[in-house]
Image (cartoon, rainbow, N blue to C red; front, side, top):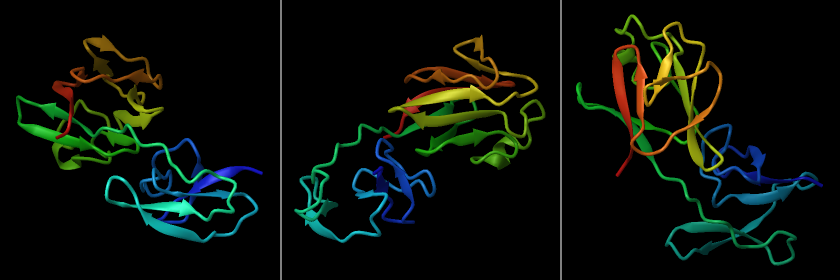
Length: 171
């Protein structure tokens, strides 16, 4: 029997290792665990140590009641020359003229592809990959190989066309 995390927002079943729902990007750190044979199971709501509500399975459940805490930190990319900050969601973000964020900013940039690069949260850290863009993407002045993932660390410089961004923690 496979075990999944059930999203409280959209009821999508996600892998138990995921911190966010792959369907709606909902927080899975407090999600209910279900097995493949189970329908939606009933849960008891209890107050957790952080003051929020956490889902706990009934005592006869085979899963432990405790949940691992998320080590997720919010990040942003910042173009200090133009005073632009782009908050990065937990799920994958496509940057480009027809991307997911700040399209009005990127659509005026002729050298940026429609879908230029991807930044996503994977295995408890962010990764960047060039999406076969025409003019390429750079990480710390090194050109990225298309479709290859590179880990991002705080302070990294991302360059696309004539735009440079710093990868920074959000407050």
